[in-house]
Length: 116
Length: 112
Picture 1 (cartoon, chains in turn orange, green):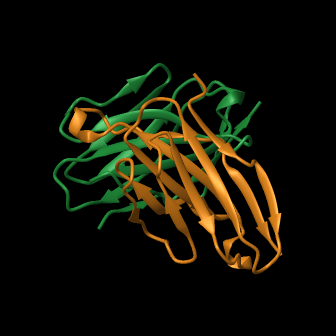
Picture 2 (tube, chains in turn green, red):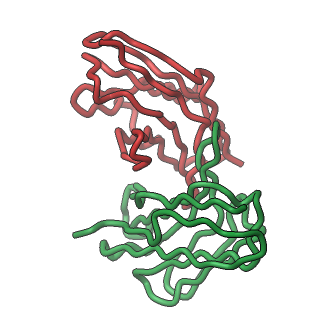
């Protein structure tokens, strides 16, 4: 049982390049989330998904796209990277509240992205 | 809208002593949860303790306990018998309808 995993752990991009971050969970969770963490700040929600095939915008969605083609995977895409997207990115997952869960989110180890 | 405020950017405590980290929140939702997460240098976000807002009893997990004051919208974390391994960033978070909102964090240093 690996929990929540993220690929890659580190990445350096040049301005304008594109990339995709992969998040995978093996806990059969319905909900998945992408956050970014900047120095001196807590985590901020970028996008989230309440089930396979669904996505929704969070607090800071601009410049990012997401897809949830399979229940266990949640992809975060940067089409044209900018230096302002230099950050640590965290993926998380949780059960559906409709299942009577306590909504605890379990986090992946993070991806450190630098955009030059 | 939900907001979470941690007014202590840094705290320090002597090993084996007790420390309390403060958190206040604001939410318009009637059904919500509150969390404390720990982030050591490894960056991993680790759940420390969880409180359901409808429960009056304060949550406790071994050396970690909370003081949940619902009317005051306050949710502080008490760490008893502090250990060197407790050194980390601590984030308070509030969860309403699926969305988890974090405070800015408190960096806790343990002095041997």
